Image (cartoon, rainbow, N blue to C red; front, side):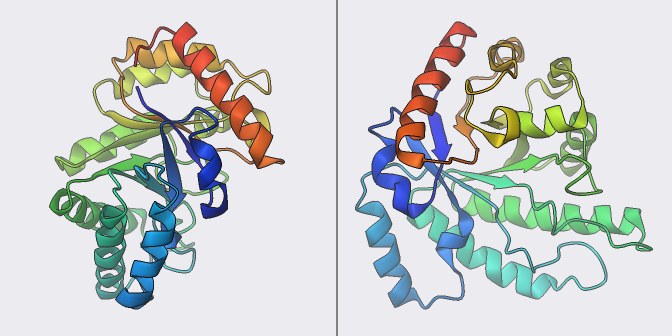
Length: 260
């Protein structure tokens, strides 16, 4: 099992010292509007930290709708084509597909049509991921953040319907807790989980609060999961908290029975 952490470019140089195997970056670092020459300079600066950049999140800019009456599939395809190429250029293997705001169905818009639009965009992302040797991990979001696909069961059904060989599930325990779903719901996702996010109370690092992180890892073990686990949290003081988070995550994951 690889352990990672969501950070910004400024924190990259602290990731390995904190005991993490890789970093997860916001996909906005690829900036598809940026000319290739400028991008190469950004890429080289990021890679200079010598930290594996295996994963990316927040695939879409917040002002790009992917459901509803204002969807522009040509613009989405142009954006994703460059973003995936640049994530692969950085060594990316995993892309989280959350986009809670982007996939919020506008009032009065047919949900069935919105779901079909979302499926089309996820399939496009899956095709691009396949071309670049990557994976797309679709994420359910809690009801406060979106109104389309909110639970483990709904996400499992959605991915099953897609039947795309490069699209599986991202399980973020934050959303599980916010929804009030029991960890036993993961049984429904057995064999379909490709990526995991963890955090403690108020999106702090795992082990800093009272959430049952050890139980979560036990549930992942029971579901047969052996893939990457990344901390997605809000650091108040990133440098010392990264180290604390790395130590806690290893302790909790190993005690939960997962072997690397």
